[in-house]
Length: 74
Image (cartoon, rainbow, N blue to C red):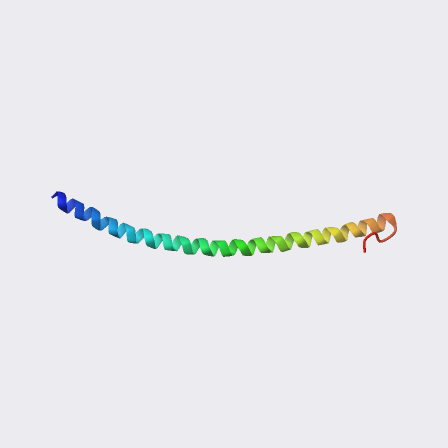
């Protein structure tokens, strides 16, 4: 009886190991996809912040031009 329990445990461990490996592979694939998506989002955000900075610079130039009467930046 003791041997049968051990065999069942060993069989379950093999199945569990296979299932765990399968789940881990799925997780790794998901993390890889998430990493690619996060890089794309980061790049978009960087472009957006650069665009905002450039627009703020343009607005500042306009305000300085209006308030001082001359174009301050080249």
